[in-house]
Length: 343
Image 1 (cartoon, rainbow, N blue to C red):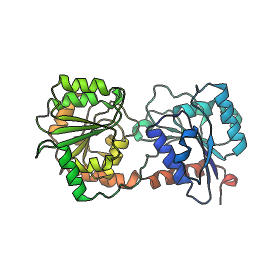
Image 2 (cartoon, rainbow, N blue to C red):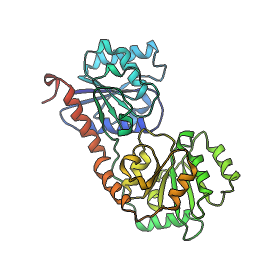
Image 3 (cartoon, one colour):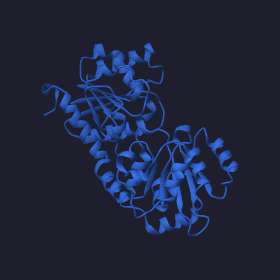
Image 4 (cartoon, one colour):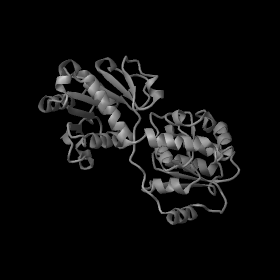
């Protein structure tokens, strides 16, 4: 089977990470040819087994030049199925749908008020059950994003890392990870920390709200209890060194932070967003945009709560790259005519 993935834009985030890992894994199936049409900047991260098609789709989704380049790629490479990744690629493929004459798949990665063009697709993939419930289409399939198994960390290195991060012995060490943007709710977490009498919060990430959040931290007099770490390349080790990961997001399509923490067997507490609210018991979830509720959850934290172990086991079963690729390939086979599939 010849499978063409289409990724619009030239950004860096969960969508791009997902697509690159998915095409690299699908290309390992011997009977399939996997192609990716995307901005040239992503080519170095794509496996040599993937046919990379450099197409600049960073212009407007209505750009005649971008649409023509995409249409020309389809004509040249003749895929059996086309898979649009995210809203921009979906809109562009939907615009061309009347000329494509082959099964079309789209993955919805995040919550959108409007989802135009859904009717053009044979099947829709949602990366969480919460997203799936918002999609009005007769063929919606939940396929969780997956990640690679975590690296094994040396216990002494983790102990040394924890010691270097914790300003006072015996304090609980909380970790928040993500871009410093409004949707991640870091301001909510800082407000909650004023109602959590003990513990130290580490914030790993950068973003446009960094200065505002640091100012809020000073206004709340939390400078001695909150550390802004900036971007880190050792997130897995940080998760292993901390007592718990806190997700304070106002909105998520799929939380990679939860996925990574659960794979590291680090306890997680979270606001009511996918996919923590699909993997954690309600006792470990609180409403979004509510500092008081988040503070109550943090104050009630119990590292021995059996819900933590249950979520870790569920993650290792459902949130792997292999599980994601296998379910995606099964979907392709279900919508592609038999005479167009590889034997």
